[in-house]
Amino acid sequence: MEFQKEEFRLLWKVYLAGLIRGIGAFFVPFVVIFLQDKSLTLAQIGVLFGVANLANFLFEIPTGVMADKYGRKFSALAGFVVTYLSFFFMIFVHSFYSLLFLFFLHAVGFTFISGAYDGWIYEYLKSHKKEHLMHNFYSRRLSFMWLGLIFSGLIGGYLASFLPLYLLLLLDTLFGVFFLFLMQQVPDPPIVQRKSFTTFRDFFEKGKIGFTLIKEDRNLLLIILASVGFTFSAGANDLLSSPIYIQLGAPLSYLGYFQALGGFLVFIIPNLLLHFSKRYSKIFLILFSALEGLLISSVFFVSNYILFGFLLAFSLVCGAITTPISSAVFQHHSKTEVRATVMSISQMFISLSYFIIFLFLGALADLFGAQFILALSGLFISISVVCYCFVKE
Image (cartoon, rainbow, N blue to C red; front, side, top):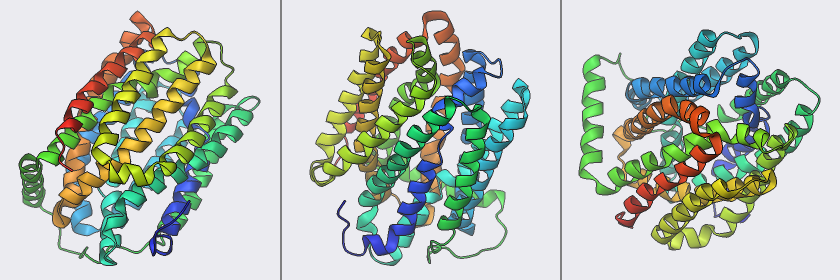
């Protein structure tokens, strides 16, 4: 992996933190199975995921404004602490309503991250006149995280074959401590100034400016609409892929191994294509988005869990290629003073879409079968493909 001049010096701690975060994701492939072991149905798990996204929708703008005003680093780190702790406490609760509260809390923590983290790194690079490295940052961050997921998938899959799943969640939390230790050493963006107490009018004015910017900049609006188009397939994958693996006869440990496969492919392929994805960004957005939808829809015809795993792994690769491109376009069309707020508005629309989708996904899967609903979800990516066709490079 070849780094541009100054890139490694400025971002090595961020990349290492992403690697550690990926390695510490032992629990990720087993979340739905863990919840099913607590006697929850897919419909109930869908409600948990949906309520979490409702919390995202409600808190995105306020937390984004707070990040812009009080510091993106503080906001992001506080959010990571809340997300790690809320998942850790799931070890000790079993009732649906207790889990509902923890999912809600986890989502609130995420809102402190979503508008702040990328804005923090962008302004940090901008203070060194290196904001052009954002595309590299998005690609490398994904790559290092997925490199970590290779190890977490292999180790987690092996451990899941003889250990209870809650111990994997405990390991996740311990790795989260190392992740936070590294990230707190990344400097605060110099652009951020400590200011007076935030009033309701501050929230309203910042939010108004952010909405106006999105409305007036066609690329920002199209990127948000495209992201919403991906929510059905992404939500279906999150909720339904693990049960489908088990229904197709995969041993529990294979959920980790398939995560490792996806991590390996995402680490290798997007980096090999990085130069071309930057040069032909719009073509890559359209081509690989369409391919992702096709791969997901193809699972309808699959009856073997090995083939199912390969289809999903390559769909992840497509997403890993398009996400850095769309994210870089979004950052370059945003403005410094409302960057976190605009990103939070974007995430707000995505969260609202997830909320609506998750309320129905579990029930639809119970009625028509998880595999059919997952395959159907791939068709919704066509919305994103159309939006990318109108994005100006």
